[in-house]
Image (cartoon, rainbow, N blue to C red):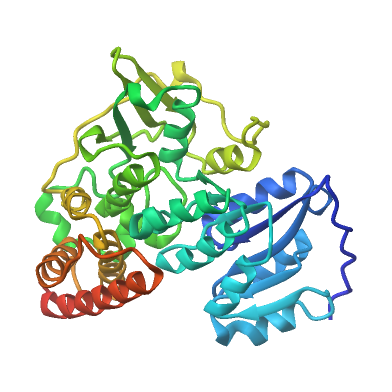
Length: 406
């Protein structure tokens, strides 16, 4: 049994924070920055959450002296309780517990849960007028208008944590968005950017899970290889910043040093450069509106020598055209796109379908749901989102079964 942990008294000099998805790559980077900045002496950690890695979740909860630790998997609750026995840290499990933890007031919340599962906790946190550091891109893709209107209603602020959107946010500082002509977000191209197209059908889960530049979780790394992550980010750019689809461009940039560029009507391009380290975007959101010293590598441009860019090949990355289709449909199309993408990814990881079939699964689901329902005109409510998500996943599983082995 662990010794009880004395919790510092909350005070005006300690910001209340919560970290959702603490055991993922975004969460771990956030924990690293919090501990470097003083940990419990500087921050009052309200909640930390994770999935099945309860041993690590318990370590984080103890290190940050969190008030509650929540696992998304109810089956993991006994192990979490055992790991935190005697510490005084509360434990809970399941979807309702995640939302209840998000409903505990905090000043700054990291939304780092991967997938649509991160939407409801983020929405709950916004109702307290908190600052939501948003790494969960699926929230804006599926329900951008609802998320942004909730923030406005409750006086909350959403700060982007995706490296590309943080870069755009920083490039726009002090600028008039009416003067913006174009926004360019960059993509590494993922694990298969140099593969012959005909070889993609033989790509394995292990090969897709290895990123050339970034250290990320398996799902987002595979999404990078298919460029579904960039497709989500294109939609996210529209929802967060309000730019039209025609203003948003994507460039393949293998070095992953230029994260985004903003072009203005006078012809100027403002570029954001930085090492491929998520602690930059996280640290910017954590310390905004100030800039704090961060433990990230400094670029030596002379040593780098050159930066390269290329237009993405539509045949290699069909997800980008699907994102354009989603932005044209609007309504619940983003929720359908995201749900179908997540289900298709599950099928690939389970080795049910081949790598290129993921895009075909999403295409089929979008076509069926846009043809059979008022997808573009549907109200974006939590109930409608959940129903669209459920239906899209069911159709995606059906499509994956039909494409099995294709």
